[in-house]
Image (cartoon, helix red, strand yellow):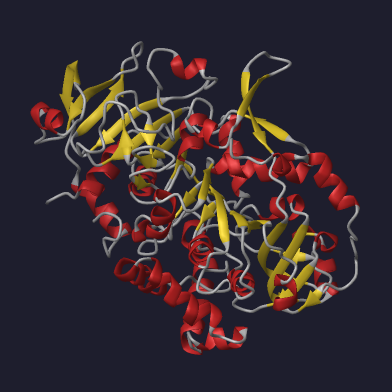
Length: 320
Length: 253
């Protein structure tokens, strides 16, 4: 059984939230200050999905602090999982699928680390993991579901079935997952942390409610009036948020709906590095793109303005 | 006109879809099959993809690589949260689900997790993604796959996505009250599952394929339906729609 009791301890999770300030005050600070709220050994839930709206600037800022013993969970695991493993920051991954995307084949990093037993890898179905976050977002220890039943996935995380008290049917009691920290990138937020998400919601609304601490980066900081003019568009209310940083191109080279497209050629170059040199390919990449750039602006300069402008133009074409 | 493996899968998959129904689809051949059905005999088919997309109108030449990127959402009717998309299937709104699989057995169980022992596998595969949910929650499921011996095995190493488990009523006994694998579409033919034993059986061969070829490329004993038929080859119209959608042949090969 690999699910830790603290992941579904709804009483402890509730007490942790009750003890925490839930301020309507300003949250806006630096990317580095936000990343500093992560402690070694924390369970981090990563927002977005695969190469979409990934909080990559937060992940890079975090890795520069050389954390250890982290657990990462994400519905479809991408760069962040491979980087965390090669950087020596991560001891456990929780996901339903791992890779860069179908054209890039199997994740050689996942293969190397799992096949040699160097990381604990806990696999759920996509909905199974979504319901774990949803149960936590609802403050309950589990949710009944009809998914994963009969499969060998039930045993991986130690899932249990229960008999429905009303119908007598067998249902999967999907255990809650209360992460320590949620890392989320959004298109717009006001300085108080009220967040607007354009396009796909993914699972970000649930992980923001499930986690004890919520770190957000935003493409754009908008006025409080702008949020109040369209309150129906607020996906995450400000009092849930602990730290906010203004980071344009905060998911790049992953995509951010409506703002910029992904850079598949960059993914290909990254994967070619792995095909040629294995984990050392990722280590080289981390040196160049994560550890060497002193600031986010230095990071973006590695790609150049023209390339980013083209990615933004493609996003406009795809969303208008 | 020569036909690629993915064109054949897309055409045969499309023909299995009905008008006025819903399909939980994926990228690649399932996506091509769904759009082809919509543009031919099933204009009132609604597609959903697991990234959280309902009713997209995919742009020819800009087909999605992942189920949650901007291209997958192009001119969609709704973008629900991922969990809510799957919950529509759990509620029973999806008639058909499409999935693929690295390894499949004679009862339609799929393995996309690990080849060899699970804890220290010989090959660690990506994982379920939404396949387990689609096969558990849709009214019926169609599997599209290239027909290769290494994929067709007596018993999968790990049941990532449950077909009929050990056959008979074992799927139902596990709590999976709904659905099941109705069709397996491969590059050699169409397969169904016997209503009682739930064993895979060959229902139809694609033009040019032989029973012998199916046997050679299957790692377990092939049961052939007494009413074995031959599928109609892809038409010019079907192929031209697929090639219009994917002019750079990213997905049709």
